[in-house]
Length: 178
Image 1 (cartoon, one colour):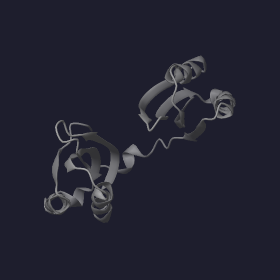
Image 2: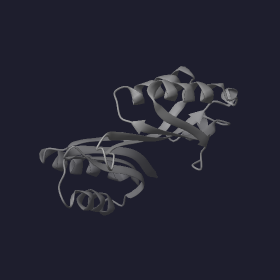
Image 3: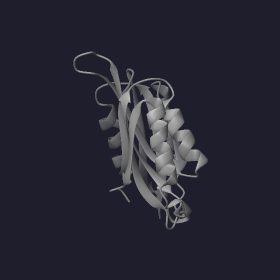
Image 4: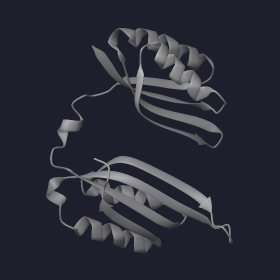
């Protein structure tokens, strides 16, 4: 019976790290179902949903110890298979935020969503310098699950108003991701 786990790894970035991790998983008969990986401030972060034969879980723990000995922080957690079915009828939406970077943008958006019982499924942010001025520009792309009882537009209108207060543009659209 296959097991599904969430594997995280953080540590110093180096060439070949992703190859090493995926080889380790492949050698155990594992498959990366979904992943996010990024270099952040000279560190590398990995977040993976991995399926592998259940009898290989102890071997995975031993392999994780090898990476930990190299200075990486590694966690493995058994995924909850029932989590997808827990939200029937919820609506998928995409939230896009763009504007000049400043403190509190992510917090204000997350706070509004939380107060309305909206679950953040994924959130990606990026700050880059503007082409001419070099002013930091902020971009956020998020996918959220909205409870069926919030199918009205009130939460969206209020979120767009928060964007005006923060001097950023916030758009909410039906998500292409299901």
